[in-house]
Image (cartoon, rainbow, N blue to C red):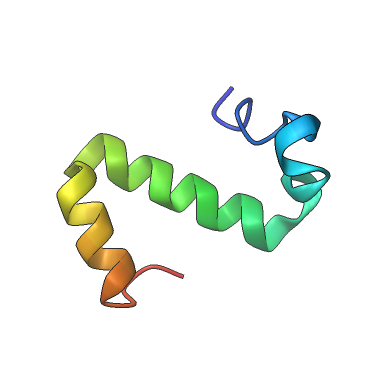
Length: 50
């Protein structure tokens, strides 16, 4: 389950239930796996990820 990390309520409270946060997390996670950390960070800094 890709959201297992953000479902740790001790760290993230109820953010896993927030669709906007969860969607952004999943988009970044997918980019990390597909493009790598450097490309994902560049996309985030350049505003290409929501």
